[in-house]
Image (cartoon, rainbow, N blue to C red; front, side, top):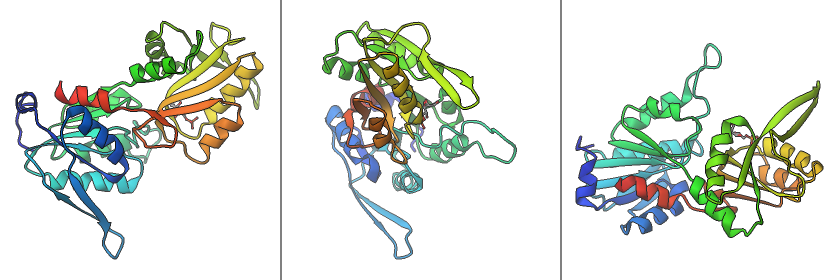
Length: 295
Ligand code: R5P
């Protein structure tokens, strides 16, 4: 941390990329987008299981990239920041795990998003996240923090799939603005699903105003976690006459067999970005992150 103003990065124009293990592929793409190099880091463990790393060739202006996909990835990020101590460091958290515990829901709980933000603020000048679950979390960092959106990249991907007039649907009103932003890239119709409780254990999900009948539907969301929300929606949309249902998200957390659950529900294709590297990662966050880094 050099305490230098952010504009210094633009003046120098040279930033080297360093990454935790889970974000290596995306970090390589960011390096390509910025026409810079990525630092070689050796990752291993001490005999007792503690994480170890050693970076080779640190430079003055560093971009530290790491998604928080589990506890080890958090420790790797903390260690990378420490290895870069004394340099001008920008932090990129492509997928910020723990962001969904963004308030104390009941007494005795931590505000996990705040705890993590504070820990990761130390030693860096600013932070960039990608479609963070709640932008309020950005204020938990002790440094300037910004969020970038992949709405354009999902929109571009949907275009490449060659649909004839798809309906872009958010699974709930919380994701409605995101669905609208995605739809804007193709001037497509957009809506969000409303949930109506029919009885104690029966719920109906349908688009709030538009009909899904005889249309290709793309459900878009920031995160697919267990896939439960979208799988339920897909079954109902098919019952309402949708031709094909697709799912696209930024962060493919895909926990507990989510991908299979989604396919079993009749979803034609599930795609996500590379904020978490998955077999179904079809578009990259690299360009949006690179733009934010030089902005
Ligand atoms: C919720 O607010 C998020 O935007 C996602 O809709 C949610 O995390 C998805 O969870 P799941 O895939 O477990 O239904």
